[in-house]
Amino acid sequence: MADINVLICDDIRNEALKLEKLIKQAGFDADIRYFEKGSDLLEYIKTGARIDVCFLDIIMPEMNGIELAKNMRDANFKGKIVFLTSSNDYGVESYQVKAYFYLLKPVSKEDIKRLLDEIKYAPPADNSLKRQSQLKQGGIKVETRNMTRLITFNEISYVEVINKNVFFRLLDGSDIVIFASLSELMPQLIADGRFAQCHRSFVVNMDAIMQISGKEIFLQCGRKTFISRGYKEFSNQYLKHIFDGEKNLKK
Image (cartoon, rainbow, N blue to C red; front, side):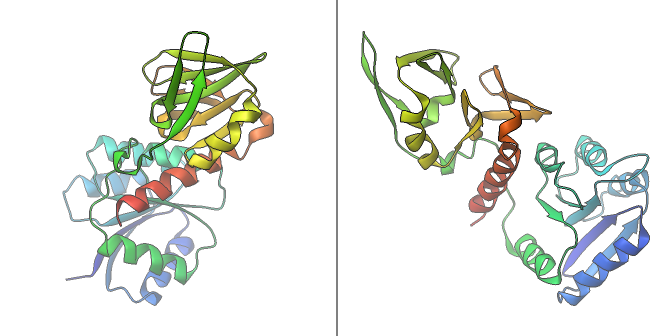
């Protein structure tokens, strides 16, 4: 029996052959099946065959890799999906279909060995965005006219500044407002690790994100914020945060 069962979908056969060669050079006894069309791969997974990992090229005609992955999940595919592409423009979308990893071409033998070792020996992943086991303690002590309160990082959806007021938008839909500047609070928020700035007026708890579509960020509390032109790296920060969290869960 093979060490690992692999599917590859790429409309360019030479690219698929390069990946197959890298897998073998990495020392794996792999059962590798290649599909040029996403529709053919979909038919194969519906047979119920054991599949450890699917490598999907993102840029393909007829059905791109993101669309294919969505169809695979709709078909109840529970295995690991790894995207291969020469562009990082699809990073966030790759997580939204519960991708296991996202590799930029050209891929090295070391990249493949590290990834397949992790897939082969790690326990099943929990793809929950909540990642309760990782939530850190701590928060920010605030004072208003009526109260002094510790706002824990766990309950913050995002922080917004309007004029000279800072609004803590909480996951339960409520708000706490204080008179302050965002710059005063930024060191505490950024030090926590799950907060990132997407706009000069918004700092978002990345654990509270439900979806990113274009420049819009949809949050678990039902609200949305925006990624402004000056914060293009936010999407990559979010992607790294999500993948790092999934890896930590498997340790």
